[in-house]
Amino acid sequence: MDSLFEYYLVDWIGIGLSLLSVYMLGNKNKWGFIVFAVSNVVWIFLGLAWMDSIGMAVGNFIFMLINIRGFTRWRMNSGAEDFVSNN
Image 1 (cartoon, rainbow, N blue to C red):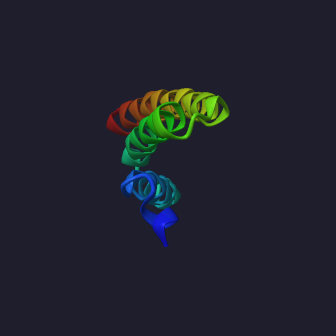
Image 2: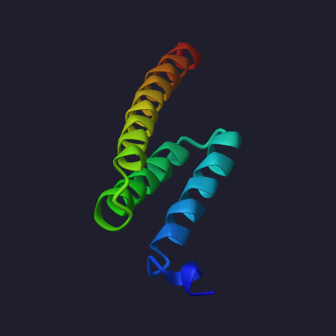
């Protein structure tokens, strides 16, 4: 039972944010990208500070870069759609 709280619930917050972001993105809510980026920061912190896992930190950093790319592409595409619908 001690392993459930080994990281002071920070790992549970990270997975909760990750799952919430996937749900939000599935509903086409662009805030899911932001929530996912926050969860990536949590996992990077855990990987470096408490778990001594460089792989986890690097993997989540790459996921965060992909999230930033997805957010910027979504923002560019939604701006183009707004422009087309207004003209």
